Length: 122
Image (cartoon, rainbow, N blue to C red):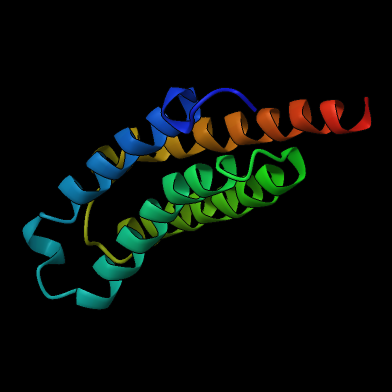
C-alpha cells in the first residue's frame, strides 16, 4: 500500500459524513439525547479512524480487517439515522444526505475490500 489514507476517496466521504452527523446532532431535538448523540458520533468517527488505522499496517489482510470494521460502523450510523427519524427526532429530509452517503461509503468499502482480496490471491 503506497497511498496514504488521506488520499482514499472513501476516507474523504467519511469525513464529509462526520461533518453532516455532527451538524445534525446540533439540532434542538437531540438536545437531551446525550447517549444517542454520543453513540452516533462514536460510530461515524469509527468509519474514518478504522480506514486510517488499517492503512498504517501496510498489509492488505490487515487493511481488509479494518475496512470491514469501518463498514460495520457505517451500517450503525445508517441504522441510527433511521432510528432518529422513527423516534421523531428529525425528518427524512434532515437525514437524507447523510443516509445517502452511508450507502455510498458502504459500497465503496465493499469494492475496496474486493479489490484488495484480488491482490492477496494474486
